Length: 73
Ligand SMILES: [Zn+2]
Image (cartoon, rainbow, N blue to C red):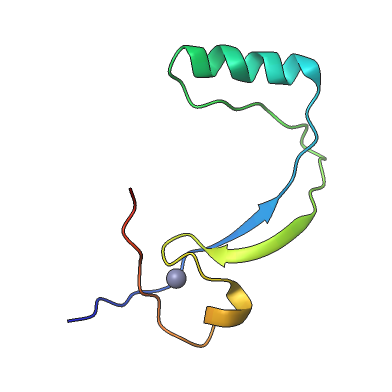
């Protein structure tokens, strides 16, 4: 039996960070928290790729096919 469902598209991007933000992320990671930081509301980001978060396939490859989720570790 194959389980199929809808793709969960997500965009990959890169974000520039400064030393202060990196230090904050290191502190969060040391506390066992998920590192993160806030962005100004007018921040524009460049999308590198769009892929599915459940089957990990690229939008261009998988858009016309059903989603077959890969097991997460
Ligand atoms: Zn998918």
